[in-house]
Each structure stands twice: as structure tokens, then as C-alpha cells.
Image 1 (spheres, rainbow, N blue to C red):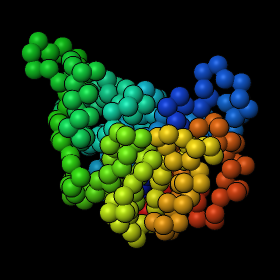
Image 2 (image 1 turned 90 degrees about the vertical axis):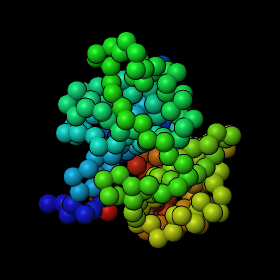
Image 3 (image 1 turned 180 degrees about the vertical axis):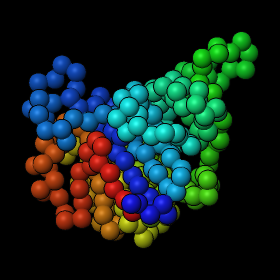
Image 4 (image 1 turned 90 degrees about the horizontal axis):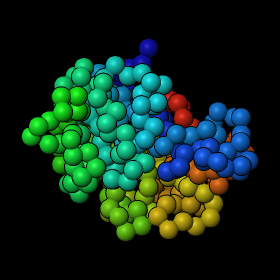
Length: 259
């Protein structure tokens, strides 16, 4: 039985914005029969004591929730506003019908974007009775807490777009980050587990490639690191993992770890 003071991390999705397999692709990785090569859009679920937190809800959110089957969600955190991280917002409805307002946490800019795309969620006039209901919590680059769990935002750039990663105790989750300052890296000392994006081997304008991700891991020095936001161009899961340092692993959908 899990110690409720521990963190349980479930990788809901580990793929890039198109997921794997990519629609219509004949790339060998997209044709793989290995379940570890089949990746929904990137998201994680963090469980601590009796609380359940989800980071990002992309277009695969419904499928991810049916697969993970949590009883509730206590908070939904957003890293940034891109569709592969937000397009599933409407599918929080079953949780809202069961729980009432679902607390969401995001940068003010992200909330303003969500108000444009999902105006019916945020409107107070002539609300459709079946719309999701949310409680908005604006976050800045300052620590905050949800249900007594301290959370530290990690500020980075996704090309030129500001994005947040999050540190929960000894666990940190960084996706879609390309550049990060030393001051932000200093927030990542003494981690048991770091999750960080590694899109492919070739350079990319807005994501870390494999070499850059491994360089950051060597600077941060977590006990273990898991790579996520993976493209089919990185290669077959089992082949890539054999080439990684002994404390670095490829995450895969439905992987669970306890910290």
C-alpha cells in the first residue's frame, strides 16, 4: 500500500503535439506494435495524500481520464496555452458535474487565451447549464500551495513564449521548455525525479533535443530523470532507452512512479 505522504506520478501522455502514431504516417515508429511507442499528447497526474492534480489537458484528455480513472481532480494546472496542452478543457465536465467548480491554475495570459477559445466556460451571462465550471487561480513565478502541497513554478521559454514547469516536493515536471535561466535551474536542486522534454535528436526551434535535455540533466543532477514530449523522430522506445545514461529513462504512457 502506498504511503500517502509520497507522490505518485502517472504519465497520462508522453507524445508531442501530433501524438504517436501521427495520422497517415508510414514512419516505422508510427507503425510500431510496441505499446511504449504509442503516445498520447503530453500530460501527467500527480497524487499526494488524498489530492489529485493534473498538469495540462490536451485533446486526448477524455481518453486519458478513462484510462487512468481517477475519482476526482482537485486541481488542473496549465504549463501554457498551446492546443496540445489545453484543447481538452471541455472534457472536465464529468468532474464538474460531480464535484462542482474545478480549480484551474495558470498564468494570466493563458487564462485570457482560454476565455477566447472556451468563452462559454467563463461567461457569467446566459450560461449553458451543461458547461464546465471552473475556479480561476492566477499564478506568477512565485511559490503557491494546493491542499497543503507546496508547488514551485519553474519559468522557461518555449521559443519566445513563456511557459511554466512545476516542482512538487522532490519531483519536477518541465515540458515544452527550450531555454531556462540559471536562477530557475537553481530551483531544481536535490530532486529525486526530473521529467523533461526531449523531442528528437535534431535541433528544434522551441523544444530541447535529446543532447540538450541530457546536458540539462547533467547540470540539475536529479537521482532519476524521465524524458517526455517525444516525437516519433526520436526513434523506437526500446532502442533509444538502451543508449541513455543509467539514471535516465524514456517515459511512456501509463507509466507510474512513486517518490
